Length: 545
Image: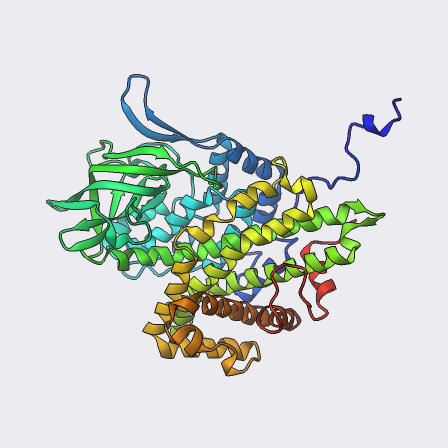
């Protein structure tokens, strides 16, 4: 009886946990993208951070932070208003780990007045790409803090005052005035119940009071309520304006920012998002009155880059999980990874992940160079919304396919892909939905037709495609909203192929053949990959012992 297999203490034919891995050394696509961006992995300690993110403790902290989501404490035991958020220690551990390497502000480490020029976007993107694989929710406040400086520099005096705290590397979750802390995080409040994306319909008011303002109104999504201050949009006498609203007033008293509830979200469970009320809350103006959208869009542009990088990171993690499982699991007397249909699927997924990774880091490189190179600035303006459209919308379907590679295990909460699958849609919704991205591409093309033509021409040339490969007039220049999604996706695919071509012409050829040319297909694993199947699979993970 004791020898009966049903009494074994370990389940047979199961893949071991994906822990104790180096998320940098095991990812050839990431290494290539980092090198193409001119980042020295050793100097940036990316190998060490890759080991830290892939460690069993870090992965477990990611699980715990999501299994025990934040709670809102509205009042204390005496009924006094608190408006504070409580987190599991695992969340704080991840915040400390990521802030120590500068995910919240390293792009501004060398910033100086008056221009506050960012740099090091690609190096920061590499850390973001790895951190989001182990725990994605804590990335939200870090992304907004890093991007906030882009808006704050519209008011240099405020930026200079806050920048030392933004650049602090010691995580300080205490609820106290920002000037007493070693570091701070900043959030954002743009949308309101009646308007959503249409922020010009906002009704929140900002009344001048001496040299500051008082804000009164409601925000439908305040991300993230545990932050030390928020960049918000409100209607000033001169029109829609950006304001910095801290949790504490200059006299040390709590500011009148009250949380109605935390959002019960599909994913992003470890991160708090709230509905909020402002009742004559102290605020400082950032940028001129009436220029709120123009001011805050500088922040939004940078958060969109993070959405692309994070979605590419989630895709990579799902691909690694599927390949790891297929390399251990045996079905019909063979490993899954040796079976033709599974190889067709994994290689197609790998090609999509390669393109997403190459595109994300090519975009980060453009952000790094935009200040000195008009061509790179034009690339960033045009390609950012297109890349967000493609990569962020591709991620959920991609992760679902990876989940299916694990069969029923992929659908079980104890395995990581269920959480990653729920996490994926947020990057496509946050900072502008797919339709908004497509319209932004149209607007960018209409505002700078010559620069757009130059960008597309260079992309076509990099892919060795004829000038008409992307029909500017039909897909972008015509301004027809009905076809905007088609043009947006095709632009992003072209940019991804061009990024791949910088280092891997054979992968670029396979990407072009399966994504830009030939018969379209709806499901992964159905494409002809031009003989690149084995090479793609070999690049996913190091060979098994």
